[in-house]
Image (cartoon, rainbow, N blue to C red):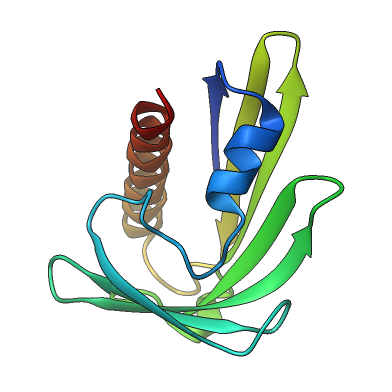
Length: 141
């Protein structure tokens, strides 16, 4: 099982950051996203995300908790990701004394893929999460 873990500090309050990222249908804070449509509501909703490179990612909302300021999702379909990889991700916003910390973590099963290919995919996802959180920080400043 490959594990991805990224954390970023924010000067804004946890509530401010949470309100910006909690809407499953609003990915305007993610660079490279050109569109997002959602079928259903709440946990179980499925979104189709269009990207600037012409790709599409289909994700299902698996958890949403306004008390713990967290949500989870599962990738159903994406370039290079098959459903059998069981790609699960979880995002949480935690208050700190001077703002908040956002943690974005994920795991996936590389199956029979070579270990170097799994590690390359893990590092690519980690880099993408870092870019997305840095972009969020810029948008909130």
